[in-house]
Length: 71
Image (cartoon, rainbow, N blue to C red; front, side, top):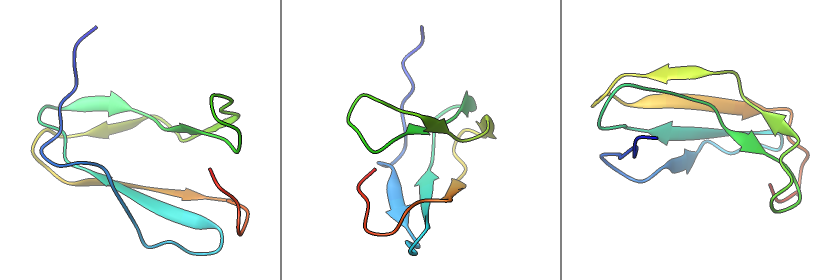
């Protein structure tokens, strides 16, 4: 397994009652997805696979979230 490094830390933005945007800038081109859920260590949902180009900003919008819920 290769270590993936990023130019900056993940940045969460544009929150709404049912969505959040995650922004990344990987150092190299990567394929990835996010897994998430409402209980730590129990991830019942995931995003589609994404490809982010090295050195370029990439955003994913996670929708269908419940209001006032920690993920």
